Amino acid sequence: LSNYSRKITNDQFTVIGHRGDGGSAPENTLAAIEKGIQAGANMLEIDVHETRDGVVCVMHDERVNRTTNGQGKIKDLTWDEIRQLDAGSWFNAKYRGEQVPSLEQVIEHIDGRAQLLIEIKKGTPYYPQIEEKVVSLIRKHQAESWCVVQSFHMDILQHIHQLDPNIRLQKLAFFAIPALGFSFDLSFHSFHPEQESFIESYNLNYLFVTKKLIRQLHQEGKKINVWTADSPGVIRKMVNMGVDGVITNHPELANTLKNKQ
Ligand code: G3P
Ligand code: CA
Image (cartoon, rainbow, N blue to C red; front, side, top):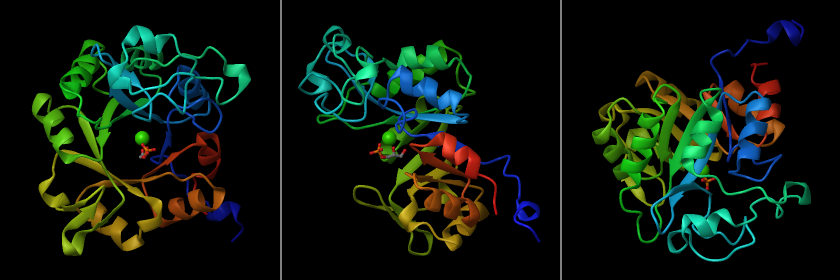
């Protein structure tokens, strides 16, 4: 068989742009979100934190230092102060003036053109009411069909589920061993996907994913996405192993490689 005839079209495969399209634009900005959409990502992943005055805003780190020209923790800054920051120049001078978006701005910008995977991070101390705020923004924009929440923290996912059982949820972890009943995120946890009916997908580090694990999770009716799959070799390997999606800084590349060889 030629390579061409051995290709299996992977229509269900989910290409998830990491921090928008973190490889080609400053992560977690509207520019990165738009790049990801144009690259054909099915879903855009972002991280959220909360400002001192309670605005849910989009950034990976707890501090603004790495990705803006400011300093300090998001929880100590007001939304007005964060809006003054330049979140683009650190990546490339052509993005000078790109702002830190709020979650609401991201939802309005995407407007259902792709799915949105919202990762809720735990600040230190933990952001009060962040789950309520995320749920109410999704509802306000009637975006339940295309917004999904992921977290390393099961208590956050449980809280979201209590607030609105219709919101789709994905559990982040580094690895999971179903036979031993535990997973590892930032500490060890019991892992019982058969009891976690509210979790649709386990999003694991690609280094620890095996065919057996994929089979076990599929048997429980769960999906498995991997992070962060950036090189052509890793993306191809994950596709051929049978994962359901990749979280990647290169969604355009993943789109060209998503068909099994
Ligand atoms: O989506 C998975 C990945 O984003 C988790 O790691 O540090 O990039 O948020 P991090
Ligand atoms: Ca993330």
